[in-house]
Every structure is written in C-alpha cells, then in structure tokens.
Amino acid sequence: MKKLITAFILLAAATLCVAQAASGDGATVVTDEVVAYFKGAYNPPTHNLGIRDGRYFPYQTPFGGRRIGYRSVIRDKALYRTGLSPDEAEELLREDLSRLESDVRAYMKEKYPAKPFDKLSRESREILLDFAYSEGAAASVKDEVYRAVIDENWQSFINDMTYVRSKNGTPDYTLNRKFADRWIYSNKLIPAPPKQAGAK
Image 1 (tube, rainbow, N blue to C red):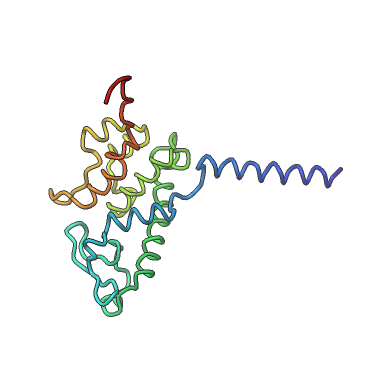
Image 2 (image 1 turned 180 degrees about the vertical axis):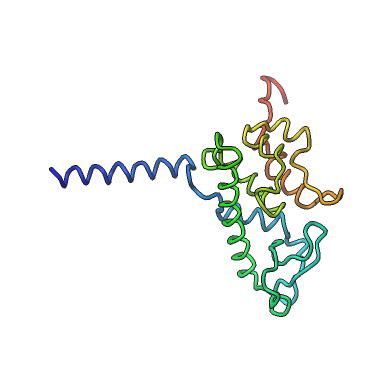
C-alpha cells in the first residue's frame, strides 16, 4: 500500500510539472526561436557590427556605449584583443538573456506582486525580456511599459508608441523595426479584424 501511495504521489507531481510546462508557468522564454529574434534585432547580418575575420570585436553604438556580439556588455578587456567567435557571441547572448529573465522575475515580484512574471502570457514575458535587454536591467524599463505589457493593453502600447525605443532622442530604428515586424505587423498582438463575407 505504501508503495502504491508513493507511486501515486510521484505521478501527481509529474503531472503537475507537465501542466506547468504546458501553461508556461515557470518555463524560460529563452528558446532558440527567441534567441534568433534577438540576434536579428540587436546585430542583424546586414550590419554585422564589430565583425572582423569571422570574429566579433567591440564596436561603438549610440544605444549603450561599446558592445560586442549582439550588444552584449564587454566584461573582459581581453575581448578587445581576442574577440568572440559567432558561437561564443551567441552563448554570451544566451547567458545575458537568462540572467535578465531572472532579473525581470525578481523585479516584478517586488514591484508588481499581483502580476508575477511566470503567470504572464508568453508574449508579455518575451516583450518584457526584450525591453530589459535593450535597457540593460529590469529596473531601467519604464513603468508605463510594464503596466501596458502586464495588462496586455496592446492597443495603447502600439498607438501611444510605447514600444518605440530611443537613446538621447535618437530612435533605435533597427530594433524598433524588428520589434514591429515580429509583433505588430504580424498581428500577433492585435489580430487583424476578420474579413466580412463577400469582401475581397
């Protein structure tokens, strides 16, 4: 009987884990697809900022000083000499995103306890991670962004241009365009109205 109860408890725990994973509860948003978006938004192949002889070296950007790879912060001065391979640049991006995801989770637990990060939709979590990455920290993202994204007030988020990022008055055109292509023009946030019968 004891073995049967133990087996039942283990089965229930496994079922709960599967349910949580399916709902996105506690699951990371740093997937291969998300990483590919960040790579294209923060240093697209058309720009290849800092690339030299197949390696990424530090480069100057008006949106946060000198960066490397996909706008990662330069933590080791040796990188000015050695640079990063494409695989190393991606690995650094993944580390940054994972760290920032934890940062956003902790920040929201403190500032928005009624709306914990892991209870938000995947869209909201990805967008908040995007803003935290572009701003450098969860606490640097504006409250109006958090509130619009938490409440999924997408109409206001788009119409009020809350999604647009800039530095010292200069819009980050590449990032803003990539963000719009992913979320706005694709109708992922606000679906296009259904066509009326007979409409062409």
